[in-house]
Amino acid sequence: MDFNIKEMFDGAKKMQEVLGEVKQKLHALRVTGESGGGMVRIQMSGAKEVLKIEIAKEIIEKDNSKMLEDLLVAAFNNASNNARELSEKEMRSISGNLPSIPGMDLNF
Image (tube, rainbow, N blue to C red; front, side, top):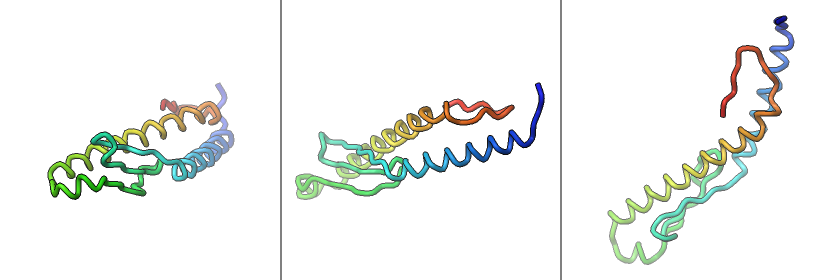
């Protein structure tokens, strides 16, 4: 097997470009996590940035801070898991387009 440093650098550059495109796409994609049957919803970007939190008035009116805290944690974790799954799906979809670089194994 011949080792060509130029091919390796070209492949790494291409990989960096493709990964940059995926990162940009993930910032634009949206996922939602919810808990309490939809009483708390958190919208997140595919890059796991919280964009919006919706809380049903019924929870606030009950003045039950412990329940609200639990629902917020559950909704955040649900949104975070959805964002992780979206990210993994996007990475798998482009892994076939990435160049083969000797010594690098891209398992997503």
